[in-house]
Image (cartoon, rainbow, N blue to C red; front, side, top):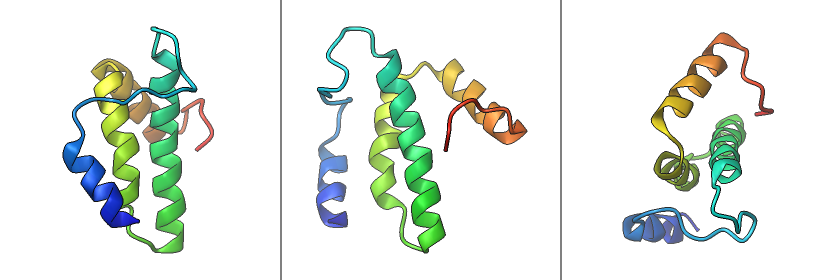
Length: 86
């Protein structure tokens, strides 16, 4: 499974179409991939497993989300004021 993900990451250019977010506005897609990355990382860290599969979510949210949002959310997570459930 990790090999499949690594192959996809090598071919990755930008976020692929996600049927959950068919509209032009990709704000929710950005938010969901940010949450999915941190949830994935938290879950796999707790199991003591390699977190490489989570990199897919990170690459997607980094290509969709404005940098200012990512910085704001990261600082909120550090301060313990992040509104999402991770």
